[in-house]
Image 1 (tube, helix red, strand yellow):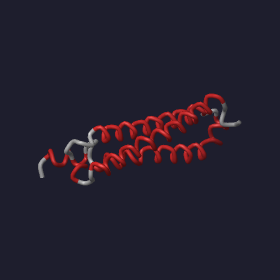
Image 2 (cartoon, helix red, strand yellow):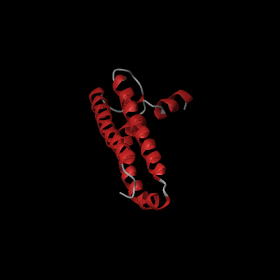
Image 3 (cartoon, one colour):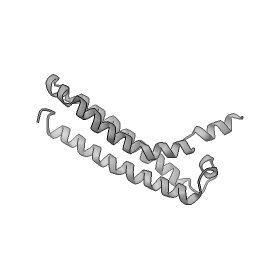
Image 4 (cartoon, one colour):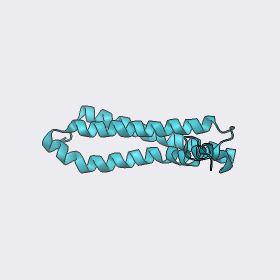
Length: 124
């Protein structure tokens, strides 16, 4: 197997890249809720509010990265690459648009979380 064929299957425009775009936002949102719930008492007791803010910011970047990866797939729908051999153009367009919308929605949720962290302490 040549290096070019391996790279085309694991690159940003591979089927794995499209799945990552679809799952980045929901993963970021669920991780934020779980980690925030687990750490809020510790942050209140120790004054570590910055940890919750940093985690939310990192997860926001993850969600926006998923939207960017989805946009990369949406722009390249007409091109021939690894995903083109796996799914039809209509399927790729639908999956990419869904990934962008879902990741953007989760990004709005995470921005609202960051606003709440700026306005409130974990003890409130």
